[in-house]
Amino acid sequence: TDATGLLPMRSHCDTWVEHVSEPLPFVDIIAFLHWSGKRLALAVDDPADAHKLEVLRQSISREWHPDMRMQNIPCVHIEEDLLGSFADRMKHRSKAENQNHLRCDNKLHNPGTLPSFASMTHPKIFSTRELDQYLDRPDYGSDQALFGAVVFSAIGGTGVRGAGGRWSYSIRLNVSAKTAVYTKVPKTRPLDLGLRTGESNTYLKRGFLSLQLLIDRYIIGQRSEISEGSLARLLQDNGMHFALNESKEVQQQLAESLRYLPQSLHVVPMPVAGVVIDGFYELIA
Image (cartoon, rainbow, N blue to C red; front, side, top):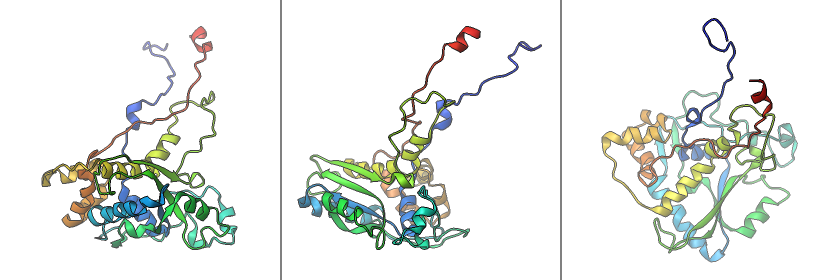
């Protein structure tokens, strides 16, 4: 110890509460699809459920995410081009499709109409087999590249919001664009120091949890009344601070899906990699 009785050097350790955060707002995903030109695919295991999924798509577009005239459409980079220049050299990829460039870049404000949810999904409701065939095409990306897909193995009732019955779905995102976690890394990383939050942040800030919240709110279908005075707090709790600069009409529309349970979600980093405790340091302490 030093003259004050304190250790001259201290180790630094992040606490869990320092990493509490909320998922990326779903409107940011719609904005990314708008600026990037990519689309979200919707698919079903059973082709007979396609009409139910169309009901879901149109309901979300009509009631939660219709066309909105905004003073500033968010400009958020969700994907990263991990393939680098190799992707740009692929014959069916153009420079305009570079994942590191969006049409909104280098602009302070991006006023305009943010398209509806339906407009930002691929027009076709795929079967699972058709989706796999679409992704495996040699010329994939030449006409319509995908941001990801939501694949339903079961849809309750007629597919309306809050319908009873069995619902089951999976979310597919692109590990090469860093919107999905690469799962082949070791479960325990003995040389890592501190709290490693990369994997959890991928789920949180790259679209996975945002899509999950959207679908879960639709399935639960329980709406709560929110007072006008609580509207701003609801938007802020869901990470939409930018919405406070929009018109009241746009704020009301952005908040509509947030009125459904769960109204907001705050998380801590999970999963994280395991750690190794070395008794050597206990012996020399």
